[in-house]
Image 1: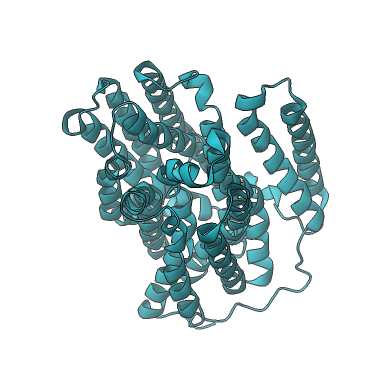
Image 2 (image 1 turned 90 degrees about the vertical axis):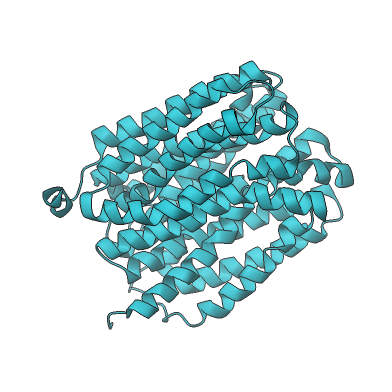
Length: 457
């Protein structure tokens, strides 16, 4: 296969960013629309929770299978299937006549979203190499992370000025554009002889990831003693144990466990768990606190995160490039620690939550820490495995980050108490800072720079 030109590489990067952008955006854009959805469709707090969690639950449960499909059938085909599925389910969400239809459509949307992220990163790994790969991942990180943080802003504006239904309908245009551009990508490489989907592993993986997370979500409503909680938890944990046993013996496993023999892959994913758990917990509670306690509007609460978005756009490519030259360890250590300091600054926030003097400094410091962290983290994990396994490697990392976020948000009530107030917000800030710090320490101890980078530094 000929070496792609610089123009071809840039085109691949644009397609990869567009393909994954909608998946990241939909993980957060709906949050500020929940009160409006409840006013029109009803269902109360439980239904609002499931509008969010149905998407995250299916996405987290299916993403490992999606990575395997990407490696077996080809990135371009899986991306196309995911984009079409995401577009169809977005239309159903936008037109949903009842809350039940919306929740089911959100679950199906999560399945389609799971197909997008592993394949988009895999085509980057297949196209770029060396320091150029780190720069490309940095650019991809900047834009996809921006989708996570810009979602509440966009959602707030649409809800306040137009309709919550447009939160879902806005996906259609970028999906259509990406599908058109996707056809200009080079064809997938021929399928390797003997490659196949690990169906048994896929079923065990979906059940083993999905049911325990379902139990964590529902325990706040039903309690640990309810069979609605403990039965899915027991079945899910048993399925996950069976999944690990099966994957260790299968001839063509969906998740090759030898991936974790690579030090940077295993340490990087452990750091991911703490860093993304912190990020999900922190931004979730900040968004709720600013509206319910400090009295911010939905739009202004979303706009509060803009400084982090700007820092991610401006700096992620830079730190991705520096990581390619110097190695990821320094950035993966320092970045989470700085982000943790940002949440310690949240302890200065009082019930008024003055934006300029209290909220802005904390948000900016956290955004700087994440800009330093995310691209080197992704590069370290994906650079630790062979490019032919980049689909499943990306899927593992994304599954870890999504499940970490789900668990963190599901456990929020244990930290906050029955109702979010200033004291509960401060407890969350401390826990979030501790989780970030844990991610930094794990990176310091576990991550190793590639030898060529270590020598250059």
